[in-house]
Image 1 (cartoon, rainbow, N blue to C red):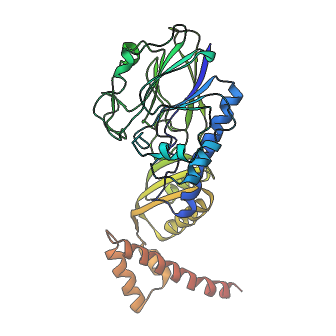
Image 2: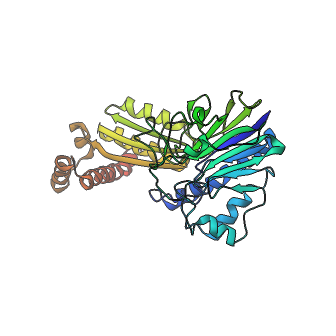
Length: 375
């Protein structure tokens, strides 16, 4: 029995430019922590090896410190780590990998394919056929040589590649880099470990994408896993077991609000999320003054609780009722301004914000007066 972990798309060094620094830094740090969890899982499960199907790094230009931190994160598992470069960290003549070698920070148990070929690990019954990318984009199938590559008899035959399985991932891949959908059959592979698709996805019983171990985008395609693969003997079908290793969960929701009940229901959904959640929330509709103020309070609470709240309220209008306007007691010039803002807010984000602020100030002005009367 040969058992290994299949992972890919670590994207170490990724920058989260759309996020505020207070969120971007922890999200980037989580990628190192995911690798540490993979190493701990490999040790816990006592697997024979860890196979990494490309895009270990997000860019060729990551710092020396980032390089050293990544390889230090592997320390918990002292078995073989077998890596190939992907489209983000291709094995160029001068690359992140040549820099890592110059810094002498690659441990001896890390086996890197910088050119295609076979690595045999007879002690654990495994032969790995690697198809590393030597440029960011290629329009030829680099796994085609697997069909004719020979491996020592008696070893489980596993392919390791990074790219797009043709006809199945056409719209959402990171790069061209085609891979034939029947490569495992053609090349007599016991298993084909793939990277590039950031979600966990089986192609057939012998071919899987592991996905990225730490989500990095708002897609519901089962990211955040590493695959444990067990193969009893050459020719046997692999047993594939997913393990969830992600720290953060990413959600994307759109909500149309018009009634106070809509706001409360949204509040209940927000309360169900916590410090490990990243939420992109798009709001639309029309709310009266009280509902809008309640909404802003709920959003403020959520922003303080979640890892990150990406909020789009452009299509949400504040629509004070006549009773709202009357209760604000905005006579004279203030009443004129309030009316003008109500008329202009559609399609005018500044007007919407000004209307909300003015209404809030008028409410605050009324509060002391009401308290004085009650006293």
